[in-house]
Length: 259
Ligand SMILES: CC(=O)CC(=O)SCCNC(=O)CCNC(=O)[C@H](O)C(C)(C)COP(=O)(O)OP(=O)(O)OC[C@H]1O[C@@H](n2cnc3c(N)ncnc32)[C@H](O)[C@@H]1OP(=O)(O)O
Ligand SMILES: NC(=O)C1=CN([C@@H]2O[C@H](COP(=O)(O)OP(=O)(O)OC[C@H]3O[C@@H](n4cnc5c(N)ncnc54)[C@H](O)[C@@H]3O)[C@@H](O)[C@H]2O)C=CC1
Image 1 (cartoon, protein in one colour):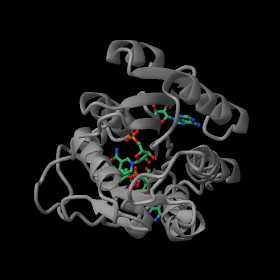
Image 2: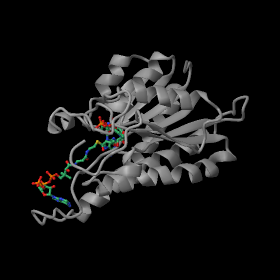
Image 3: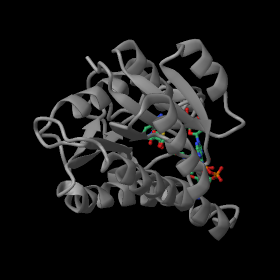
């Protein structure tokens, strides 16, 4: 149960973030869905009812994130769990050896800006708000959960920017947990494998309907709620801190194309 837990979920209008927002409300919590103003976040929040509200947020903007946290305070009184799911990808070799097309520096920096900068922005500002919470019986004031990817460890061809950004999210997990330990705020990261969302739709088809050979068990794409289950586990287990958990059915990405 997540009874009375107040969560803020970035990327909450789609895929893994949406499943997390839905689970929070289903399990008795409340949620601020943060996503781009162009997303379906407002409709989704309306559909979820009084325990959900939408905040239009670009995670790279300090003002947007502060406004979302203000809304969280006005609507729900406090923040217990910030879940960073907003993320983007670019798929392009550093150099396409056949066409001679070079990866642009702009694309590389954009992915780092959203995936690293956005995650850190939400983490630091959420922590400031959580630090005002009364600690629970364990002395905990809140928890921050970031989303990396198995591409942080074994990225494929074409994933320099994405893998670098996710490796950075892995890298900031322990120092952030150490920074926030004295305030009683925990920080963990989930590194998902292949999950069926708008980020990955079409990949299976592109791969001739073939799942990756390295996929072990279960040999299928993850369901977004299976990510949300990991979020719930981290929120509810006080010993979870400073750790990166792969949720991937034991798959390892291979160097070749597509999946
Ligand atoms: C887990 C998560 O967090 C979510 C995920 O990541 S999901 C996983 C998503 N998967 C990916 O991101 C991988 C995506 N990769 C791809 O889409 C492709 O491999 C790619 C776009 C990177 C390259 O595709 P491609 O079709 O090989 O590129 P293309 O430009 O058409 O290259 C044509 C040829 O040059 C070769 N080539 C081009 N650049 C190359 C390079 N740097 N090295 C070797 N060969 C190269 C290709 O192998 C291909 O050869 P053939 O014609 O003999 O097959
Ligand atoms: N789907 C998968 O297989 C995997 C996904 N991930 C990661 O999980 C996270 C969620 O991805 P999915 O749900 O799959 O993708 P998705 O594309 O379905 O959802 C991402 C959401 O982030 C939002 N977003 C993008 N840029 C934003 C910004 N600047 N500010 C605010 N919101 C922004 C999008 O509008 C979208 O709603 C991402 O960080 C992704 O890298 C990691 C491993 C595997």
